[in-house]
Amino acid sequence: MRALSRFSIPIRDRKNGKYEYRFEVDDTFFENFENNLVSKGNFDIILELEKKSDHLELDFFIEGFMKTTCDRCTADINLPMDIDQKLLVKYDNNQESKDDEVWLITYETVDINLANIINEFICLAVPITKTYDCDLEIQKPCNEEIKEKIGFGIDEDDFDDDTNSPFSDLFKNIDL
Image (tube, rainbow, N blue to C red; front, side, top):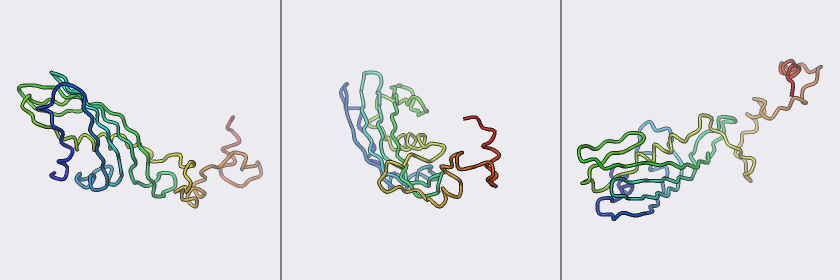
């Protein structure tokens, strides 16, 4: 985890106020996590930290892409992602713990490492269906052959009553 030490931010000696940190993650970042949902990608992270006397408020703004396979046409794509997340860190004299919504730290905690939470925020933002509207790209990554085979973009007007396609019967009963 030494490679992830650059994601540690100092908190104990900080005065109350607002601070901003910037991080970049790439493929080498994701290699540090076993069985990760995201294995390749590039992301820019802006962290706005507000330190108060009894807690910290962390706002994460993560923008970039993950490298994956399109679920529509099976082409390799850079799936764009734009993530805004918040994390509340509270001070507790008795314990340290991390859960999904609130982290507890002691007043003696010197710094906190954000690598795991950054990874979690990125993984949680991965959509169930990995596709996006690539029509705006100059060079579309789409595998047109696969799209044609699965009938992507087929319009009901493509089927007449005398068409022998199994889809023609389906379109007859649809009111559009």
